[in-house]
Length: 239
View 1 (cartoon, helix red, strand yellow):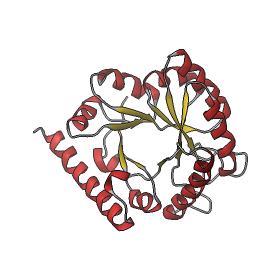
View 2 (tube, one colour; view 1 turned 60 degrees about the vertical axis):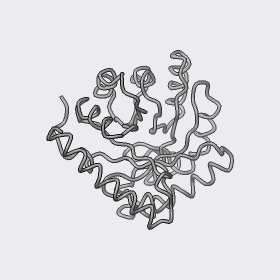
View 3 (spheres, one colour; view 1 turned 30 degrees about the vertical axis):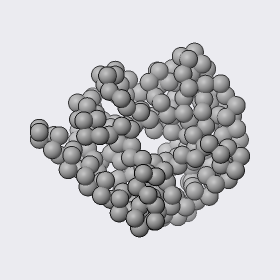
């Protein structure tokens, strides 16, 4: 086993134990929570090692990093999630490889994703990114739609050809009433999810929690956690 593979295996085992413990504390089954490893800024060689170690969900946040990495790993069975703020000029590229876009936060983006998905003859999973630090009608500091805009945007995704409404995503806010209160933020996201599922029962994916707060996300009911640094460590940025 190479040094890097041993390092990633040890880190993965620690993260797995954290998820197992968080699920036990919340009275949840381990299989209710999917680990997505955020491979942004890390090379394709790490993705290949992660696949060898059993990881099947990976995430990227910049198309210029993701596109060549996906090509280099095309022979692997992986589900690719795009989690970064997405500009419409990158939509065609992202739609060619992403299985799920977790950062849908405006109608213009829905229109562009739909057109690209139809053109590519693909079905693209979409999560509405909820900004818990945004006022009505505004976008969040790190992207996302204000809570009162979720239903309208979800309806647009649900009606758009080539798109599938999978659920919600959030990033714990750095400002506003939920700053430093990750559990409260994730509880709020679950409330919004419950309302969404009343009208869209299949939109049951809730992506929340990262390396520092995955336990809070699991406790609140998240179905997916996005972990980067705790698995891959701190490494220089690509490019």
